[in-house]
Length: 317
Ligand SMILES: Cc1cc2nc3c(=O)[nH]c(=O)nc-3n(C[C@H](O)[C@H](O)[C@H](O)COP(=O)(O)O)c2cc1C
Image (tube, rainbow, N blue to C red):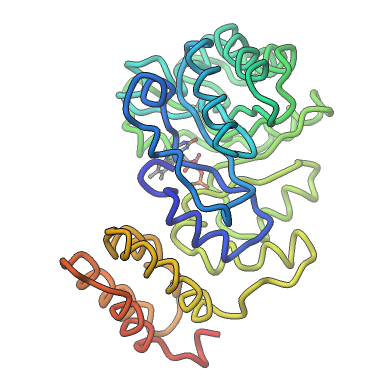
């Protein structure tokens, strides 16, 4: 998620769950190939398995960007066909490509040809005046013919004409039945569902209903402990690494100190940690101490320790 799931956010999330697949923010192929965005590919080895999400519509350029990602060690390269922002529309990236399945298929083919790791697509169920029941099967058919074996489907349309990107994440109604229908139609295609899923209980019911995966965005960001910490045990049958959000904060301290010693700012990391105690006693103090102090020049991890002191340990566990 742009501006959210940067490498610091992913490091935190990886401490919470060893097995979930994490995704980068969307990085556009032109920015990587022609611009100065190579630094955005940086990540910590601990983040694996991690997928690089690319935006673009030029097969040759996407192939080069995919190769750059694979060379950097990303485990998967994902093509964004879901982002509704204006900037992205003007560059013919993202959701508007739902109208050009042939272009998406050519992009996918070029990317698959360029790398050895898995190439996947994240899409919507349709855009604007499209009828999802009609266009989505055709879209997926073209993708599978191009060699795509795994997709994540955000189960709502994007209405590009009239709604803001933010509204496009909430207003078009969710249609999970259609995603289940696609799994029935394309049993060999690995399908994850995305959109409006806020708990692991919900995620499990999609898996029980036959879907292969669940992608969680905002809920994982805002309530990372509640949503991500139980994943290893509940989905993958393995004990989680940490027993409480307290322990996760302590485990972040060396990472924070390393970042500060390289000249980084405290807030670049702590802004992703604000939700760690969401819904727990002390959460408000935690957020306040961090947000009021982390942006100051010279702020150190002492701020984090001070904020942690405001959260009752026995209740937080
Ligand atoms: C701040 C923000 C940035 C986002 N950036 C991206 C992005 O870069 N790529 C992408 O595929 N989806 C992006 N999304 C959409 C989410 O991945 C997801 O599809 C959407 O929020 C619905 O899922 P959710 O209800 O689980 O959040 C973004 C969402 C938010 C809130």
